[in-house]
Amino acid sequence: MFLFFSKIGFFFIQPSNALVFLGGLGVVLLWSRWRRVGRGLCSVAVLMLAVLGLSPAGNLLILPLEERFSIPEHIDAIDGIIVLGGSLDTIVMGARGVLVLTSSAERLTVVPGLARRFPGVPVIHAGGHGLLMAAAVSEADGAGELLLDFGLPTERIILEDQSRNTHENAMFTYKMIAPKPGQKWLLVTSAYHMPRSIGVFRKAGWTGLIAYPVDWRTRGWEDATLGFSGVSSGLKRFDIAAREWIGLAAYWASGRTSAFFPVQADQ
Image (cartoon, rainbow, N blue to C red; front, side):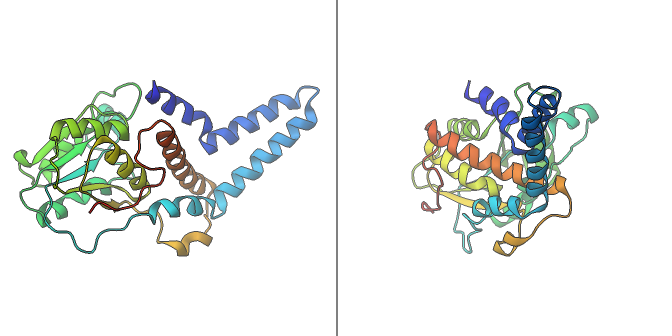
């Protein structure tokens, strides 16, 4: 039920969608006796689309997420590498029959270097279908093929293929791996997604987590005043960041994370 409401609910409250709905309501009201209200709603919707799309708003919202964790300068021996899904477009993959990477491809492309740096440890990819309705192929199918193409031997690859969100990533991999106290696990995901991921994995029972953020969208705080040259780019950045903040709040309210805004503390 939580998954259903999180997927459907965010469709309506996603900022760019919400502003379109607001503008649409305004257009409808223009044809009624509430014309003044309709003009106001249309004006607000267009103004906010321009502000969120062209101003630094998207960067300002995503920067606290990306700056929460940094790549550790020194990493001792680890017991495994956990890579979260989101790097593969399963819809297009199913239709085309080829691997199709998303804008979060670095979650997977960073693996060969890490695998060489930490030889022998397992690489666990967590991710099945990120949609309510399963696609023809799962992320695990594509991830397994790509990891083999990277040169990893089959015995080092562990695929969790049932999870549909971050909470299930953590729960299902915990059941599969049964990590022991004292072990250390490298957690790889997008920098903006790392705070929620760390909190959810800790709540699921994982300890010894070492955050390894990738897929940065900003250079750092110098982008706090940087706007966008296209409305679509700014809105996409704002939507991504808003989704994470809403996810942090929803996971915290539902008891699915160890903290609202986790920090790295158990290396």
